[in-house]
Image 1 (cartoon, rainbow, N blue to C red):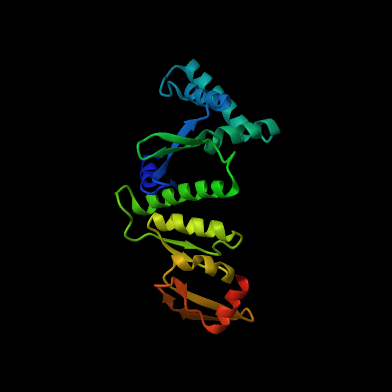
Image 2: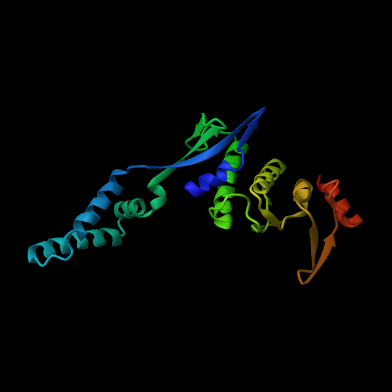
Length: 235
């Protein structure tokens, strides 16, 4: 988690005037009673595992059999208990703390509650990008030299605002984005890409690919007339 937080520190989460804020993720044990008891039962069942005392071995076997039977049970109450004690995602919650450049805590996000849809998406996308940045770039400082992220059917159901937000976040983390997307998203993606290919499939059997030039100055694709007309109709 420290390495993920290092990645989050490299890219501002919010900007307001001269102020910039950064996210810091803090894990917190939920201290669920049934999980705590399960851990204690495991420790008790496995303690003194190498003892030669017959009575202690018998007692340990009884405890282990009780746990195994409960874990294998298909009763509703036991299944709910099993899901709770074995699903580690339920044991920890994550708190996102927002700090400014001076280290002053600005806001705390315990969940997406109280945030707009766009803010929740931004929070989730920023954390995802930081985790990917850690996986692809390791613990070294600076951007990764080669960090491609391939998105198939990218932003198919997302609106233009979220598409631009997500691409901007990924770009800030130094990723090279390779996206396959419907034509309707091209207009929003144009400022973030350096080239494109148009793929056409006819009769679900014949595929063709057309390379499209990219105008770096205008940050626009030089689309052929047919594709350009289709794009304009989606604007």
